Length: 431
Image (cartoon, rainbow, N blue to C red; front, side, top):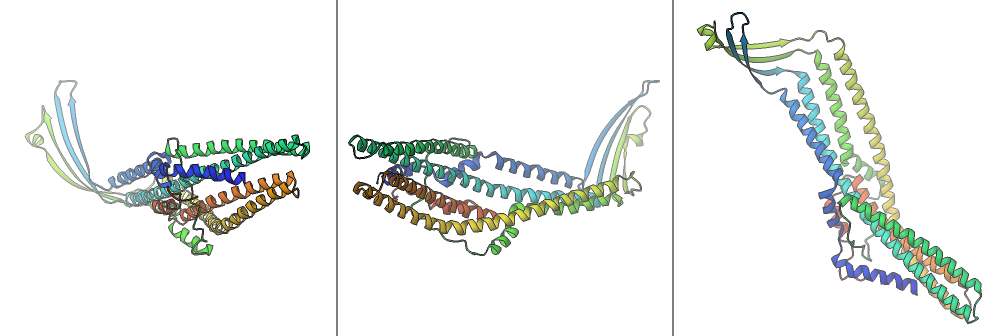
């Protein structure tokens, strides 16, 4: 069984490299330190944090110093004035609600950062298992090509000995040529998958630890998609962030309407004069206490326009929230189904591999006895390769679907990656 032997040989090479290969957590650590998407999310949170500080500053005491020097053009005399003004807002509803809105948006950016961290976990897992899937596909196609090459050599020898027809040689060469094309495509797909992983980590990936032979494939718990959807609507940080944006929109409407409200400020003004013609009292200066009530009466329609603008912005945020909510519901249900189907698919493809191995062995025996043709053998080799490839893809797809389901539910993090990391091949583990 040369095809099976080739796959086992390639797997043995992976086993020898497992002790020195990178695992999922190591790759995640590299991506977390180098991923620009996560860094940009953290920077956006910093920008919004400072916007909240600036909005709060309008409610804090304000202190200004001013110095003025005057010169009379007629007599050349000079005078100087030094003034200090301290003001404090006593009532400014607009400034207060703007501060509320900026703080709410700061909370939204914090949630978006958490969503970006979970998205990074998902992107790393997707790229990691994308490389493993591409490696498995290349191993299968390469073993398939080697098996067809052996059949070409065998068919040629049988033809030269007069035991078979030329058509058997041509048919084996056709299957071998097609297999070579599949191997070239698989090698190109692997190079692209490795580049996708390097895009996250900022460095070329080394050898990656593959999944162990035994994989705990179980359906999701709970099994009902509705339970996962409810959990996702309550805990998904990206959706929570969009809800905060809607809240901030409501607060900005109140802030815009508050432009009609009066504002009340207290102030302390002090100053002194110097120069020619100033009196002793002016040189000593004085202090004045003031309370200023400002009542806006007319602003040319700008206030009502600002209210309408804030309402439109709030409506946009609501629509974006609804779009995100519906997409999250669909994604969550899809991943529940993917995990459920993936667990069953692993078992069916494992059975397919076993049956294909047995069929290939029987076909080889039948060919040697004259009861099976070269076409039967070539098709059996191809079937075994397809079954092996389907089993590898099912295993990787199941693990990735579990992680994506946890992301949708707002529960994906390093701990979940660590759980999957325990399913990878260990240094002394049999294939």
